[in-house]
Length: 237
Ligand code: UDP
Image (tube, rainbow, N blue to C red):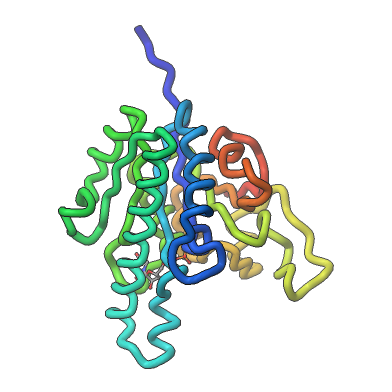
Protein backbone atom coordinates (compact mmCIF):
# COMPACT_ATOMS: atom_id res chain seq x y z
CA UNK A 1 0.00 0.00 0.00
CA UNK A 2 1.45 3.39 -0.93
CA UNK A 3 1.14 6.12 1.67
CA UNK A 4 0.64 9.66 0.46
CA UNK A 5 3.41 11.88 1.76
CA UNK A 6 2.13 14.47 4.20
CA UNK A 7 3.05 18.11 4.02
CA UNK A 8 5.98 18.90 6.34
CA UNK A 9 6.50 22.48 7.49
CA UNK A 10 9.02 24.37 9.57
CA UNK A 11 7.31 27.09 11.61
CA UNK A 12 9.43 29.90 13.03
CA UNK A 13 7.91 31.63 16.07
CA UNK A 14 9.66 34.68 17.46
CA UNK A 15 9.99 35.30 21.18
CA UNK A 16 7.45 38.10 20.83
CA UNK A 17 4.82 35.44 20.09
CA UNK A 18 5.31 34.09 23.62
CA UNK A 19 5.42 37.22 25.70
CA UNK A 20 2.56 39.09 24.04
CA UNK A 21 4.89 42.11 23.91
CA UNK A 22 6.09 41.65 27.52
CA UNK A 23 9.13 40.05 29.13
CA UNK A 24 8.62 36.33 29.79
CA UNK A 25 5.83 33.97 28.82
CA UNK A 26 2.14 34.91 28.73
CA UNK A 27 0.20 31.64 29.25
CA UNK A 28 -2.98 32.94 27.59
CA UNK A 29 -1.09 33.93 24.45
CA UNK A 30 0.88 30.67 24.24
CA UNK A 31 -2.21 28.59 24.91
CA UNK A 32 -4.11 30.22 22.01
CA UNK A 33 -1.12 29.74 19.73
CA UNK A 34 -0.77 26.09 20.77
CA UNK A 35 -4.43 25.42 19.96
CA UNK A 36 -3.89 26.78 16.45
CA UNK A 37 -0.86 24.56 15.92
CA UNK A 38 -2.52 21.45 17.42
CA UNK A 39 -5.46 21.86 15.03
CA UNK A 40 -3.16 21.86 12.00
CA UNK A 41 -1.03 19.01 13.40
CA UNK A 42 -3.90 16.61 12.68
CA UNK A 43 -2.97 16.64 9.00
CA UNK A 44 0.47 18.29 8.64
CA UNK A 45 3.91 17.36 10.03
CA UNK A 46 5.04 20.37 12.05
CA UNK A 47 8.54 21.26 13.26
CA UNK A 48 8.99 24.53 15.12
CA UNK A 49 11.98 26.74 15.86
CA UNK A 50 11.31 29.15 18.70
CA UNK A 51 12.98 32.52 19.21
CA UNK A 52 13.90 34.04 22.53
CA UNK A 53 13.62 37.80 22.14
CA UNK A 54 11.01 37.92 24.95
CA UNK A 55 13.88 37.06 27.31
CA UNK A 56 17.25 38.15 25.91
CA UNK A 57 18.89 39.11 22.66
CA UNK A 58 22.63 38.64 22.76
CA UNK A 59 23.40 41.61 20.50
CA UNK A 60 21.45 43.97 22.78
CA UNK A 61 23.12 42.68 25.96
CA UNK A 62 26.56 42.95 24.38
CA UNK A 63 25.87 46.58 23.43
CA UNK A 64 25.33 47.14 27.13
CA UNK A 65 28.70 45.71 28.08
CA UNK A 66 28.34 41.92 28.21
CA UNK A 67 30.57 39.51 26.37
CA UNK A 68 28.72 38.66 23.14
CA UNK A 69 29.20 34.89 23.28
CA UNK A 70 27.95 34.66 26.85
CA UNK A 71 25.02 36.93 26.11
CA UNK A 72 24.11 34.81 23.09
CA UNK A 73 24.09 31.69 25.27
CA UNK A 74 21.63 33.48 27.56
CA UNK A 75 19.52 34.18 24.49
CA UNK A 76 19.62 30.50 23.54
CA UNK A 77 18.58 29.44 27.04
CA UNK A 78 15.60 31.79 26.74
CA UNK A 79 14.46 29.92 23.64
CA UNK A 80 14.45 26.67 25.65
CA UNK A 81 12.01 28.19 28.16
CA UNK A 82 9.73 29.13 25.28
CA UNK A 83 10.04 25.62 23.85
CA UNK A 84 8.97 24.08 27.17
CA UNK A 85 6.04 26.47 27.52
CA UNK A 86 4.90 25.66 23.99
CA UNK A 87 5.29 21.92 24.63
CA UNK A 88 3.10 22.19 27.70
CA UNK A 89 0.27 24.01 25.95
CA UNK A 90 0.53 21.82 22.85
CA UNK A 91 0.12 18.72 25.01
CA UNK A 92 -2.88 20.34 26.74
CA UNK A 93 -4.34 20.99 23.29
CA UNK A 94 -3.99 17.29 22.44
CA UNK A 95 -0.83 17.29 20.32
CA UNK A 96 1.98 14.82 21.07
CA UNK A 97 5.18 16.84 21.28
CA UNK A 98 8.94 16.48 21.63
CA UNK A 99 11.46 19.21 22.41
CA UNK A 100 15.00 18.90 21.06
CA UNK A 101 17.73 21.21 22.28
CA UNK A 102 20.94 22.16 20.51
CA UNK A 103 22.59 22.58 23.94
CA UNK A 104 22.63 19.36 25.95
CA UNK A 105 20.27 19.40 28.92
CA UNK A 106 18.94 15.88 28.95
CA UNK A 107 16.62 16.38 31.91
CA UNK A 108 14.50 18.90 30.03
CA UNK A 109 14.85 18.04 26.35
CA UNK A 110 16.17 15.47 23.92
CA UNK A 111 19.41 16.39 22.18
CA UNK A 112 19.09 17.61 18.61
CA UNK A 113 19.11 14.44 16.49
CA UNK A 114 17.73 15.19 13.01
CA UNK A 115 16.86 11.60 12.07
CA UNK A 116 15.00 11.15 15.35
CA UNK A 117 13.19 14.44 14.74
CA UNK A 118 12.05 13.11 11.37
CA UNK A 119 10.82 9.91 13.00
CA UNK A 120 8.79 11.96 15.50
CA UNK A 121 7.26 13.93 12.64
CA UNK A 122 6.33 10.76 10.77
CA UNK A 123 4.57 9.58 13.92
CA UNK A 124 2.54 12.77 14.03
CA UNK A 125 4.43 14.45 16.88
CA UNK A 126 5.11 18.16 16.81
CA UNK A 127 8.87 18.72 17.23
CA UNK A 128 10.00 21.93 18.90
CA UNK A 129 13.65 22.91 18.48
CA UNK A 130 15.15 24.96 21.32
CA UNK A 131 18.56 26.58 21.96
CA UNK A 132 18.88 27.76 18.37
CA UNK A 133 21.89 26.23 16.65
CA UNK A 134 23.83 26.14 19.91
CA UNK A 135 26.17 28.69 18.35
CA UNK A 136 26.66 32.34 19.26
CA UNK A 137 26.25 34.95 16.49
CA UNK A 138 23.35 33.02 14.94
CA UNK A 139 19.68 33.97 14.93
CA UNK A 140 16.74 31.63 15.23
CA UNK A 141 15.57 32.72 11.72
CA UNK A 142 18.76 31.19 10.35
CA UNK A 143 18.29 28.08 12.48
CA UNK A 144 14.76 27.67 11.10
CA UNK A 145 16.17 27.73 7.55
CA UNK A 146 18.96 25.27 8.43
CA UNK A 147 16.71 22.81 10.29
CA UNK A 148 14.11 22.99 7.49
CA UNK A 149 16.78 21.94 5.02
CA UNK A 150 18.15 19.20 7.24
CA UNK A 151 14.80 17.55 8.01
CA UNK A 152 13.44 18.00 4.48
CA UNK A 153 10.61 20.45 5.18
CA UNK A 154 8.56 21.69 2.22
CA UNK A 155 8.57 25.32 3.35
CA UNK A 156 9.73 27.66 6.13
CA UNK A 157 6.74 29.52 7.60
CA UNK A 158 7.84 32.70 9.37
CA UNK A 159 5.09 33.95 11.71
CA UNK A 160 5.42 37.67 12.49
CA UNK A 161 3.89 39.94 15.11
CA UNK A 162 2.72 43.35 14.00
CA UNK A 163 3.40 42.87 10.27
CA UNK A 164 1.58 40.62 7.81
CA UNK A 165 4.23 39.94 5.18
CA UNK A 166 7.16 41.41 3.29
CA UNK A 167 6.77 45.05 2.21
CA UNK A 168 8.47 46.97 -0.60
CA UNK A 169 10.08 49.16 2.09
CA UNK A 170 9.88 49.52 5.88
CA UNK A 171 6.14 50.26 6.44
CA UNK A 172 6.88 52.01 9.76
CA UNK A 173 9.09 54.53 7.95
CA UNK A 174 7.64 54.73 4.43
CA UNK A 175 3.82 55.20 4.26
CA UNK A 176 3.91 54.29 0.54
CA UNK A 177 5.33 50.82 1.23
CA UNK A 178 3.13 48.07 -0.20
CA UNK A 179 2.80 44.45 0.82
CA UNK A 180 4.24 42.02 -1.73
CA UNK A 181 2.43 38.74 -2.50
CA UNK A 182 5.64 37.29 -3.86
CA UNK A 183 9.28 38.41 -3.84
CA UNK A 184 12.57 36.81 -4.82
CA UNK A 185 15.33 36.19 -2.29
CA UNK A 186 17.64 38.22 -4.50
CA UNK A 187 15.32 41.24 -4.39
CA UNK A 188 14.75 40.92 -0.65
CA UNK A 189 18.51 40.84 -0.08
CA UNK A 190 19.35 43.62 -2.52
CA UNK A 191 16.71 45.93 -1.08
CA UNK A 192 17.76 45.03 2.47
CA UNK A 193 14.21 44.00 3.43
CA UNK A 194 14.90 43.09 7.03
CA UNK A 195 11.70 41.28 7.95
CA UNK A 196 13.79 38.09 8.11
CA UNK A 197 17.57 37.86 8.73
CA UNK A 198 19.72 38.09 5.61
CA UNK A 199 21.59 34.90 6.57
CA UNK A 200 18.29 33.01 6.64
CA UNK A 201 17.29 34.48 3.27
CA UNK A 202 20.60 33.54 1.66
CA UNK A 203 20.63 30.00 3.08
CA UNK A 204 17.15 29.41 1.64
CA UNK A 205 18.12 31.06 -1.65
CA UNK A 206 21.23 28.91 -2.08
CA UNK A 207 19.30 25.72 -1.40
CA UNK A 208 15.98 26.46 -3.13
CA UNK A 209 13.91 26.40 0.07
CA UNK A 210 10.70 28.47 -0.21
CA UNK A 211 9.68 30.75 2.65
CA UNK A 212 6.30 32.20 3.55
CA UNK A 213 6.23 35.27 5.79
CA UNK A 214 2.84 36.00 7.35
CA UNK A 215 1.22 37.79 10.28
CA UNK A 216 -0.07 35.98 13.36
CA UNK A 217 -3.17 38.19 13.38
CA UNK A 218 -6.10 37.67 12.94
CA UNK A 219 -6.63 34.50 15.01
CA UNK A 220 -6.49 31.40 12.84
CA UNK A 221 -3.66 32.69 10.63
CA UNK A 222 -1.10 30.21 11.97
CA UNK A 223 -3.43 27.27 11.26
CA UNK A 224 -4.19 28.59 7.77
CA UNK A 225 -0.53 29.03 6.87
CA UNK A 226 0.38 25.57 8.14
CA UNK A 227 -2.45 24.02 6.11
CA UNK A 228 -1.05 25.69 2.99
CA UNK A 229 -3.08 28.85 2.45
CA UNK A 230 -1.18 31.54 0.56
CA UNK A 231 -1.41 34.30 3.17
CA UNK A 232 1.37 36.86 3.61
CA UNK A 233 4.30 36.84 1.21
CA UNK A 234 5.95 33.95 -0.60
CA UNK A 235 9.73 34.33 -0.91
CA UNK A 236 11.31 32.17 -3.62
CA UNK A 237 14.18 32.17 -6.11
N1 UDP B 1 20.91 32.85 19.61
C1 UDP B 1 22.21 32.45 19.31
N2 UDP B 1 22.41 31.41 18.45
C2 UDP B 1 21.38 30.76 17.84
C3 UDP B 1 20.05 31.23 18.10
C4 UDP B 1 19.85 32.26 18.99
O1 UDP B 1 23.17 32.99 19.83
O2 UDP B 1 21.62 29.82 17.07
C5 UDP B 1 20.70 33.87 20.65
C6 UDP B 1 20.92 35.29 20.17
O3 UDP B 1 21.49 36.03 21.23
C7 UDP B 1 19.51 35.77 19.91
C8 UDP B 1 18.74 35.09 21.01
O4 UDP B 1 19.36 33.80 21.12
O5 UDP B 1 19.41 37.16 19.99
C9 UDP B 1 17.25 34.94 20.77
O6 UDP B 1 17.01 34.50 19.45
P1 UDP B 1 16.37 35.47 18.34
O7 UDP B 1 16.90 36.86 18.51
O8 UDP B 1 16.56 34.83 17.02
O9 UDP B 1 14.85 35.41 18.79
P2 UDP B 1 13.58 36.16 18.17
O10 UDP B 1 14.02 37.49 17.62
O11 UDP B 1 13.06 35.29 17.09
O12 UDP B 1 12.64 36.28 19.32
